[in-house]
Length: 190
Length: 190
DNA sequence: GATGGTACATAACAAACGTTTGGTACGGAG
DNA sequence: CTCCGTACCAAACGTTTGTTATGTACCATC
Image: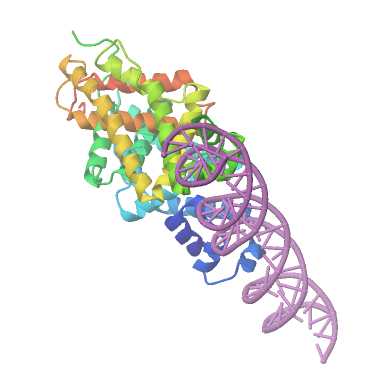
């Protein structure tokens, strides 16, 4: 079931997630689907949970580093570095569109972002504690900008994989993390 | 015509852009639309050009600053700072979804990204020349990461406007620009 | 004034969608 | 054995979609 939903999701995205497509993907009838999902909305919700589960499965692995290195590891997990990660990101971008028009889905996406930032946050805190990031910046701002840079990179990589191959995506993340390590200067040089 | 298309686009997004919706928005019939747009694809293309035109209208204003300040001004133009900018960004996010499933639209989005980065690039170059950004970093990488941070911020602001009010979005951009001004340090402090 | 192309409206079309209905198979409870 | 709820299938329904067909004003040209 979840496998069929994911296949449709990966191939056609949230906007094209249709009862018949899912039914066909699992060799069943639309009647069976309505048996489990009284309304389309329920199928969409389930599809969202499937996507989230898959995301967490690849994301919530344990990591033996701390601070900036841990932040780096988690950001890299989100990037479009493998075909599977590309499919994953395509699904989530398509979900953005669906969520924009549906307040309920929008709320779940808001919550998903909060969870993601909450997951990144302790490692940013650790980076501050270890002195990897010099004091002076707000923790939540660093978290938000790290998330922003990563997702912005994902979108660009999705539309221009040639210009944003895996190694460049990683390098751009590393460049960003390196800038975090230098002291915040309010005044400009000279 | 372009006004009606834009209204539908802003209200329902690219995925819900329908012949009848556009026809209703301009008080005409679907027959008239097919007269000008033989196929749906043509209407979508036109809608894309309408969106791009609107984007450029707000973006291609002249600026009396150079270097980092100019980069800042252009990035701020993209952010979801006003209701109009929010609508604009919602349209583009919905276009991402449409483009992911359509190679032709994907190509136009790739090109649009290239144009955006090309527009930002000279100001990054100027920032290097003025010494606002210390040497050592690749110009195109700075451009790409600036674009990434901005769009990543846009998406987060779209789904969490309370947590990302205009002043915080601006502040996050300013924080990022400030980190550009400090020398790239390969080694970590102690 | 006849002719023909442009600019629409009206209406119908097939396809795809979510949903509903009627029915079948089956397995445990009484 | 009977009964009944669960688990499905096949088919149809009404709606919405893009598309097409037919008809009609209008305006310019000859």
